Length: 380
Ligand SMILES: Cc1cc2nc3c(=O)[nH]c(=O)nc-3n(C[C@H](O)[C@H](O)[C@H](O)COP(=O)(O)O)c2cc1C
Ligand SMILES: O=C(O)C(=O)c1ccccc1
Image 1 (cartoon, rainbow, N blue to C red):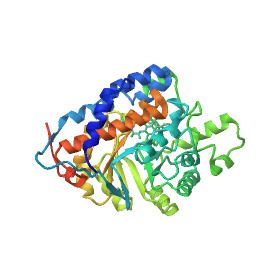
Image 2 (image 1 turned 135 degrees about the vertical axis):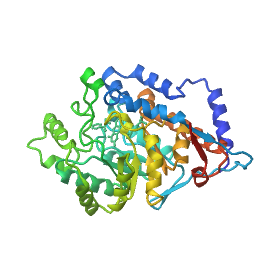
Image 3 (image 1 turned 30 degrees about the vertical axis):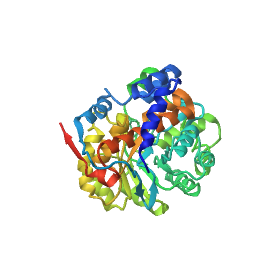
Image 4 (image 1 turned 45 degrees about the horizontal axis):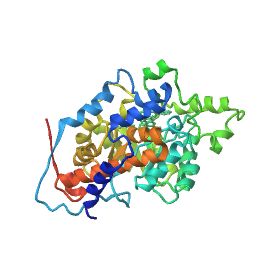
């Protein structure tokens, strides 16, 4: 693939009369103008004093790229192979639930934009639309399913089976959200997307979930989601059970300690996502990018190590990839694009992300991801 495209895109953007926010701050501002206080606060905020949220962002400038020159960067191959499947670039859509709080088209708009730009889409358990609705809207594109365990574990297994039947290619079990984090903004705004019914896409369509209810009233559905979603007893035995119930590759999302990464490998897990949930769970934890190098070292290439939390632009993605991430997941930036302008807004965000990532890789002096992994990064 040639590299001229990056400059073309920059010129198109500069020549455009259409105004669309280009960086994260502008995107957040555009979303704020569209949303009411509850939904905006839910998406923006994090747990506790938001120390970890700030750390996630402030940690990136501590890592500096040391580029090489005169390497002929006229071609660029950003392909990455994960579980035997080759993706054109290493950028994924992080699982984000309750998308209808940002835009009526919710996850459908995001998954369609993701399909257009070849970002594998990780669908959340707590989506506003169901697995089957998203699969029907985006036939043929790569999709993974993010699983929240259920108190009634047969519900979790049922969702995994549905994802498999709909052609999803992997299961991402999130382990940092066995109960909700302490989120003061939501208390202040008295806003719970669960209680307002924005999380029911996959539940109201699930035969195991629905058949366990005494009736199918909205209130009954919502209170049963709330009962099922918190699962503090989750442990490694459950991982073994999940492995017995699916042949899909399983990743664990929320790993921050190298020992947990090693345990995951021992227990037969196929991949991990280094993440602190965007600072939304335990406040005070290590910045995700600071946790990455030791985990990459502990994993030693045995399984893919994906990364999220704090990625705001292409050069952040380049740093995470150079520090050893196999691929990087985009979170809040696409949600702000969705709030600002539905599918078109997500498309603009993804297009800019992809182009900035590509131009940043080339300007680092490398032509593919394995060279990028050997790029020098210094921590100042
Ligand atoms: C509004 C919102 C909802 C989220 N819902 C989920 C979810 O359902 N499942 C999950 O594993 N992570 C969820 N996350 C966490 C993201 O997958 C990701 O870890 C986080 O957004 C990364 O931080 P960043 O957006 O600041 O980069 C959510 C994040 C946000 C902002
Ligand atoms: O808000 C979140 O971060 C999240 O993961 C979640 C959990 C339960 C319901 C909706 C979203």
